[in-house]
Image (cartoon, rainbow, N blue to C red; front, side, top):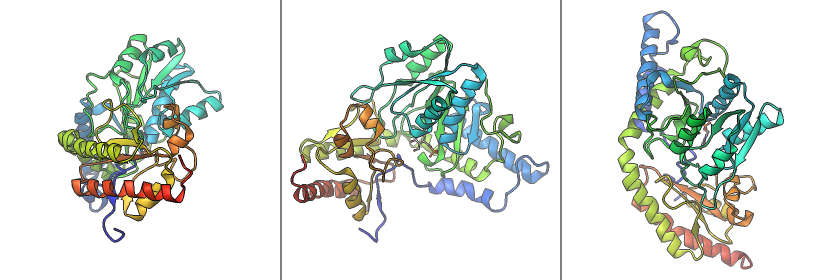
Length: 387
Ligand code: PLP
């Protein structure tokens, strides 16, 4: 396989830029390079492109264009939401979960370490789901914000964000959700999910890396995280990256158009992959709730396997997958998500994530389905004492 195109089953780590997205970006990287804040006509074009993208992203989320704030990435959006909530409320308590992306966990740890806020880390159930009663019990009079991811990047498990957001609204507490993994995979309707802040990242929806979105509900007060010029309606300093913003706008349109395909064909590929492996690998189990999950993600535990070695073997055959989040790959640490779900470190290290997209085909699925049992068998032969 080495000279062929890789079989890319790691779409939760990042996605290929769609040709339509690339096309939408090119003019802003070549002839129309004006600064959107300047006074001449060339700048007006850039300003118009910004507004077009704002409308496109707002349509994806069913919100108002003025509620869309462009950022540099999903991590910045997550950090900015927590920062703003702490500053505008003056409160010093945050509630989040133990299975969030490091964009939230590391920022939460930083807040704790520096005494800026206390953090309640909600546990999850064995299947990765969240108990809303535990959230309700954790809310305090000094809670600034609750931050819960919409879909988990490692398992695809969905949190009940509509209910959690409504609960927070009823208690007068701000609610943020990291929806980075969701566009194009599940419907995102902010008219029915009363979140105050929502984070997105371009490179998870076939737009480039280095561009993100923070939805800020118009009723929510906002304190700048990136301070400088008066861009983004005074809410974020930094000259706007028009090419990437235009690309993200086009990607948001495509995500809406492709939702059905993701929920049917891509789900079908995932289900075939999962069902066949569960049948062909003795003891294999799915990590995470089988139904409350993104349609493109499966996280499988192969008991006794060395997940890291399996990844390398797969890579050798041109197959890209992941052991937990991209950030933990390469380190020997078991995934914090899987251990929070009660897996032992050995079970976590024997688990791999496969995340599909519309670019994947049945032929690719069947090729890898033939490969994995053989690679696991080889591992068993090399390490016969592994259980
Ligand atoms: N949140 C989640 C759930 C993610 O999966 C990621 C990326 O892996 C991020 C946040 C960070 O996004 P970015 O890479 O754009 O900073």
